Length: 313
Image 1 (cartoon, rainbow, N blue to C red):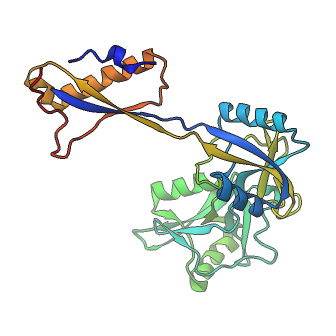
Image 2 (image 1 turned 30 degrees about the vertical axis):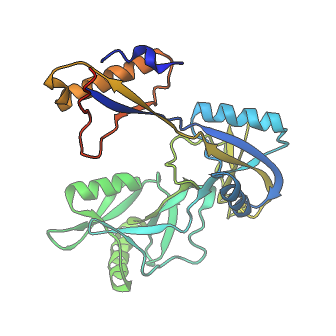
């Protein structure tokens, strides 16, 4: 396609056109590897283990799986951040300095436990964040604890505490944990502000919709903290299991700089007019079939200007 067909605006300036295509290209690597070894291979030879989120991602993923003949399942870049515990203390997120886990805790039973409650013995236990429990707030005005004996899920508990007090309560030391224990003895096992991140993509992409297979994640082996996929469905697996794996790359962004000559009065130096010109160019690009993700920007000259006077006009 010749872009010059629509550059009829006729000063001289330069327009930078970047074709942004963030789609992933997938590669099935037919060699058995643990999740960690698979990630190392992908980072050395491609970009990373595969991130698969959108319908288009899954379509390309499945085409590659079928083309290469994936026999069962393959590692993708999804993993469970089981050691990412932190707490909310007086409105601030903080790393844990001391922990008071019950024996055998945290165990992530069922594969979905990411929030913490304290029991009458002062021990912490991890639970599914959607469970309904009483909770304990920290009140900034009283500079003390408030026990709330009606039940909410963890997020609802924290929201209530933030609205009516300051934040959901968390202990920094044994003394503070004992204070929480006293309230838990009165109202039963109660939510506190300790929680963790859950599933994350290895390339730091924020997870959106995860296509778990029915009944997954289930953490059936108690340390199923890595994910594999096939037929558009994800399952949790032990990270030291060995499977084939999928790597990905992103399509390279291509940038083209065009020289633009226009005839106009001083209004072309108005930022609003310059913005309108870019908008028109973008519309023309889209009309000619370029991606909606195409980015158009003025190329600023060394003196800070966009246009310079052309004596030939």
